[in-house]
Amino acid sequence: MDTGAGDKPSDRVVVVGVDGSDAGRRALRWAFEEARFRGLRLRAIGVVQLHLVALSVPGYPYADETYINELVAATREEVAKEVAEAGADWPGVEAEVEAVLGTPAEALVEASEGAELLVVGSRGRGGFSGLLLGSVSQQVVSHAHVPVLVVRPQRPGKAPAED
Image (cartoon, rainbow, N blue to C red; front, side, top):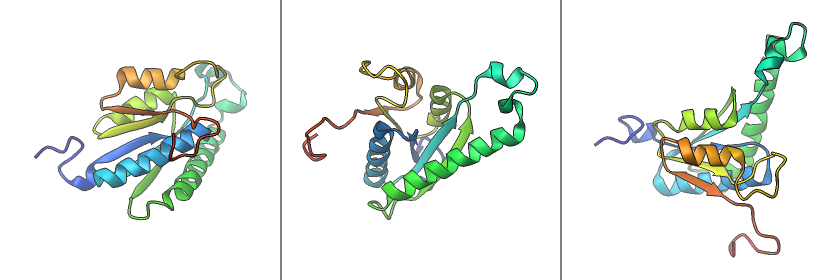
C-alpha cells in the first residue's frame, strides 16, 4: 500500500505553517487534531523571509550569513515554543519543528509534497486584514500537492466549540 509520503506510516505527516499570528496558532491546533485523528506525525514550519535585493547589497545586515542563521534559529525556537504549548493537548502526537529561509507560500507548497494534509491560517501577519484569504493561503490552496485545510480566525464572541 502506498502511503503517499513513504513506505512507513511514521513517514506520513500533516504539515502546518506557523507564523505567530492568532490564525497560525489556531491552524496549529487544527493540525494537531488532524494528525491525532489520522495517526500521523506533525511537521510545523516557520519561514524567515528576506528580500533578495537586500541579500545582494554589500554591507547590508541581512547579507551577513551569521545574522541570517540567527534569524532562522530564532524562528525555529518560536515555532518550537508554539508547538510545545499547543501540543500539550495532544501528548501522543509526534511533532517536528523546522524553520526555513524563503517565501512562506513556496516553502509550504514544497513541504506539502509527500504530506497527507497541509494546514494554514486564513490570515497571517500581512497588512491587508480586509481580505477573506491572505496571499499565502491563496497561493497554497492553488499550488499545494495535497489537500489544504484553511483555518479561519475565531469569530468574536463565539466559544471555540461554537465556531
